[in-house]
Each structure stands twice: as C-alpha cells, then as structure tokens.
Amino acid sequence: MTFVNQSFPQAANSPASHEAAETAKSMGEEVRDFAGDVGRMAGKQYGRAQDMAVETLDETYAAMRRNPLLTLGIALGIGFAFGVLTGVRR
Image (tube, rainbow, N blue to C red; front, side, top):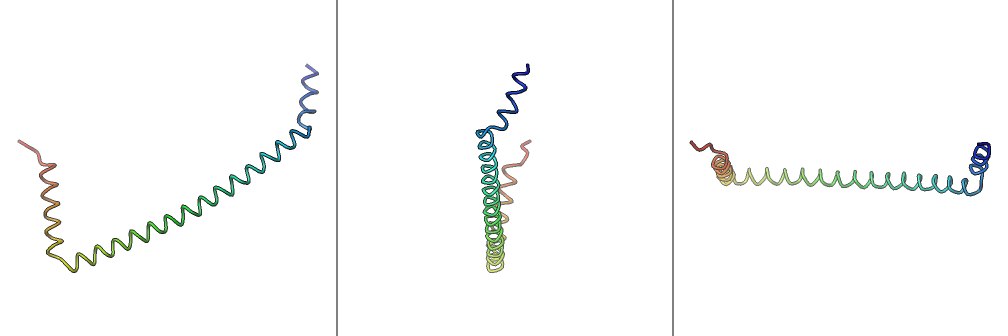
C-alpha cells in the first residue's frame, strides 16, 4: 500500500503531468474563446433576423394600406378555408 501512496505524488509532479495540465488549460482557453466567438456571431444573426422581420412587417402593412380590398379578400379566403378545414360535420 505504501508503494501506491508514494507513486501518486511522484506521478502528479512529473513533467508529463505538468504538460497535460498545461495542455488542458490551453484547450480550455481555446474553447472559451470559441464560445465567445459563437455567441457574438449568434447575436449578429439574431439582430439581422429581427431587422428582416421588422422590414417585412412594414412592407406587408404598406401593401395592405395600398390595396385594402385585396387584403379583405385574402382575409375572407383564409377565414373560409380555415372554417372548412376545422368545421364540425354533423
């Protein structure tokens, strides 16, 4: 049992263990940097998607204002189709 107790401290202080610890630390830093980069890219893409959604909404609203009868016809058609698909048959 004393052999195992003496071997562990020697292995923990060996050059290989120090190298492994440095490698693990370096990998951890790289993963942290990569995660930060991914977070920044995701934030940019979220902002772009939000801008596109707002722009599309504005364009749709403008089209509805230009063509109110067409908008009403489309709404009636969608309502009719929804009613037919979800209607209860007796």
